[in-house]
Image 1 (tube, rainbow, N blue to C red):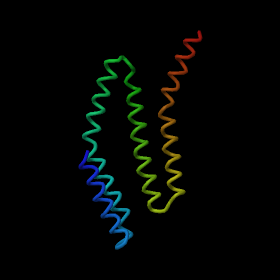
Image 2: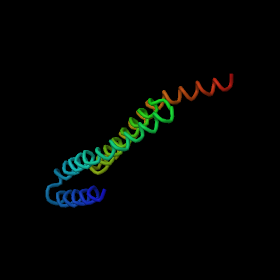
Image 3: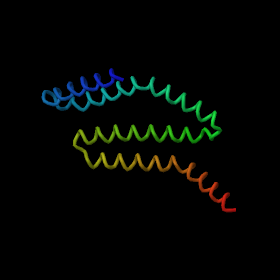
Image 4: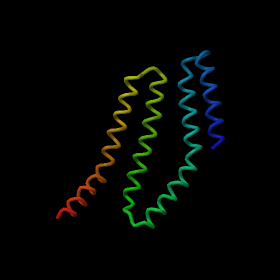
Length: 126
């Protein structure tokens, strides 16, 4: 993890220098830095997902819940990255729209879980 922090600081420094020298390249540098960091972190995330899959399969919980949770987590991270990039470029309105779109996607992803919860509640009432 220390490599990620050091790499992020180096990327931030490069972006800061670029912002003063060639401002049009600073956002591109930031985006490339984010892509590099995300790909670097994917190996760690893969181990966590594998552990979660094993835990879910042993507990007897429907594995579709884990899939929905992971998709929601991915959309949340992507939304945050896109929103931050929009804010850094001075597009606050676009950033707010990206935030709203991300929240909407997560709610849509959660609908199957809410449906199963409602079915379980109706089953308990009957």
